[in-house]
Image (cartoon, rainbow, N blue to C red; front, side, top):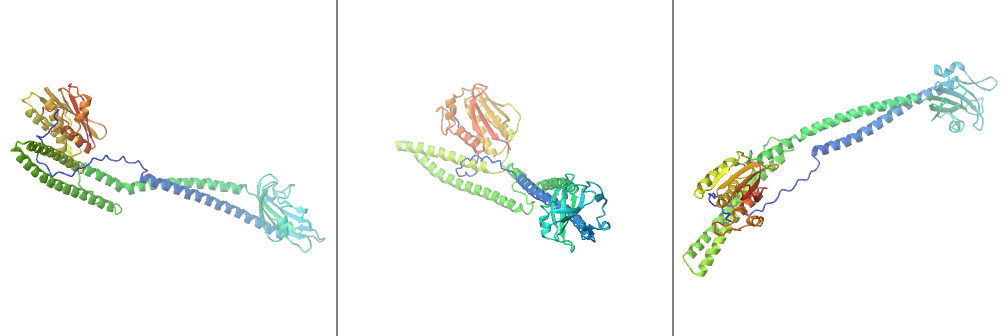
Length: 485
C-alpha cells in the first residue's frame, strides 16, 4: 500500500537535527503558595492568640486576686488596731475600731474576720468574730495556723471553704501583745466566687475578641496573598499568550520581585529561538553536503549497466530516501518545540480537498469535506499540511470513488480529523505494519512507504497520535488527534 506524499513538499527551511519526542511530565499537584501562606498564618495566629488569651486571662485573674488580697490586708490592719487587753489581762477589742463593712454584720454574707487567742501549743482558746461568721468554725484551722503563729507579723494566704461551703480567699497574721504571752491570730476571709466569675466573663470576652481578631487577620492575609500573588497569575497568562502564538516575550510590567523571573524567561525564549535557528542552519548545510555527493554517484551509476552500477544506484537511492526522511523528522521536531505556532485548519483542509480533486479527477475519485469546523492547530502550517496531505493522498490512491474528510472536537484540548475512503481497507495486522517506517503493502504503487510513518511521527511530536481503523465507507479510516491552540 503506497503511503508516499510528495506533491506538497515545497521549498523547505533548513532541516533541524534529529529530535526525539519527549512526552510532557505530568505535573505533581503540590500545595499552592496561597494555601501554604494561609495555613502558616493560621497556625501562627492560633499559637499567638491562644497564648495571648491564656496570658491575659491569667494576668486578669491574678489582678482580681491581688485586689481581693489588698482588701483582706486592709481588714487585718483594722483588726490590729482593734485588738486590746482588758484590765484583768484578758484579750479584748475596741468595738469602734472593728471593720465597718455592713456585710460583716450579715450572717453568712461571705465576708468574715476573727481574732483568735491561742495557747503555747497553738490551740484556739477563745475568739472574737462578727455576726457574718455566726457560729461556724474559724476559717483558718489550727493546723494551718502553725506558720503564721511561728512567724509573727508576716501575712500568710491560702484558699479554703467557708461556713456556707463557699470558696474563700483567706489571709492570716499573728501579733504579739505585751500583756499576753502567746501570739494572737488575726484572720480575714472573703468569698472569691465574684472574683472567679469576673475572671470567667473576662476570659469568654477575650476568647470572642481573639476569635474575631483571628478571623480578621486571616481575611486580611487571604486578601493580601491574593493581591501579592496576582503578578504570578499574569506571568502564567503571558506564558499562555506566548504558547498560543499571540506574543513572543513576557511583558516587562511586573513588580521588582517578579521582574528577574520575567527577564530570565525572556532570555530563555531568545536562547531557544537562536538554538533552533542555528540547528536549522547546520542541518541545512548537512543536507546540501549529502545531497550533492549522492546525486553525483547516482548520475555516474546511471550511465553504466554493470552489476556494480546497479548496486550503487539502489544504495544511493536508499540513502537519499533515508536522508530525506530523517531531515524531515528533524525539521518537524524543531518546529514542534517552537512556542507560539498556530494554524487555522479550515483553509488548509479546503485547499487540500480542491488540490486532490484535480489530481485524481481522471481516476474518478471525489474528495469531500463533511463539516464546517475550523479548529486552530497548535503547530506549524507546514506540519499540518504534511500530516493531513499524506493521509488524504493515501486515501485517494486506494479509494474506489469517494474520500471524506471530517473534523470534530476531541478530548480536552484536542480535536480530531477523520480521513475515510471506500477502498479495500486493511486488516488489523496490516494496519499495524502500515505505521512502521518504510513498509509498503503493495509494491505496484509508487512511493517510499514513509507517508503514514511521517504522519504518525509528526502527530507524536505535537503530543497527538494517529489511529487506523475500519471506516463507515467500507475502507480505511485514518484518524488524527492533534492539540488545539
